[in-house]
Length: 336
Ligand SMILES: [Fe+2]
Ligand SMILES: [Fe+2]
Image 1 (spheres, rainbow, N blue to C red):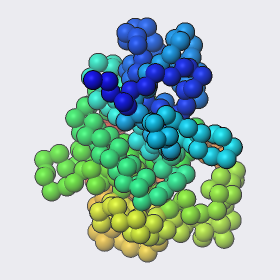
Image 2: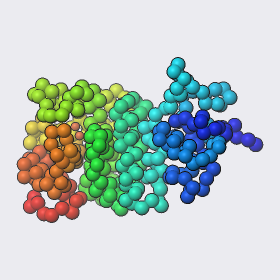
Image 3: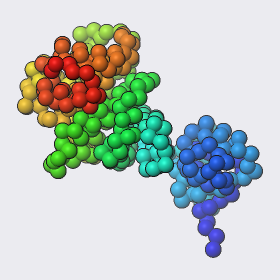
Image 4: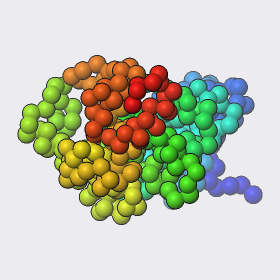
């Protein structure tokens, strides 16, 4: 019996949000799989370059905003443009995480690229639904980090910082979970997925800060700094309202700028009063900031960043946590 969800369309009718099935073997096209959701115009162009006359789409897996009663996709807005639902967790990300045939170096690049897209989509539109979806994607990432040391090695190693907040979120997520993995490997008392979600979302409160402050190409004034310092509490409140996260995840968001010596914010609490997950996040956060290009300074190489953290900031961190962090890089001894 014919499946009504499977429809043949011309290449001119291709739209974002359609789930396509290519009638080609794996070596005849450049995609990871021969069936997938279209999420960019670039992908539509690539499909058109394959020289097909028509293509099959699966409506049951498509993410089109509206469809005709016949199941035919239709233009939904006044401008005649079809508005695709923007996915937070893309099929490409999930495929890359689960693809056992990819060499670790390629796998880590793909995962990083797609998880940055995930953070971009989420931070541009941090609705409860999107946060819920992202937690699933982050859980998949955490499972990979826990299970696949080869890919993790490359994930830590890659450094490309194009869109700071998105890449920073992903990098702090990967670094923080790796530190948590080394600390809690023998314990079953820690929900690594909840930790991962908190780490990836630690800066989500920045969505509530004036964009001109976030992207200011220079040092912030005292007033701007005060505004910026609201982001941990803002993030905590946002997640509180969306009711999507565990208390542990939210604590990471709230406490990631607290410092062991009490000089942090928002509360200025000390050492053991800061949750262990908040202390983990603060190390990963500072390290990633130092090793990233910022508008007002060049990035530092990993060893130089660790050295500054050791020599000038050690009172901000829990010392043995910092030592465990240094060991992740198999860095030369810092005498800490
Ligand atoms: Fe932050
Ligand atoms: Fe951060």
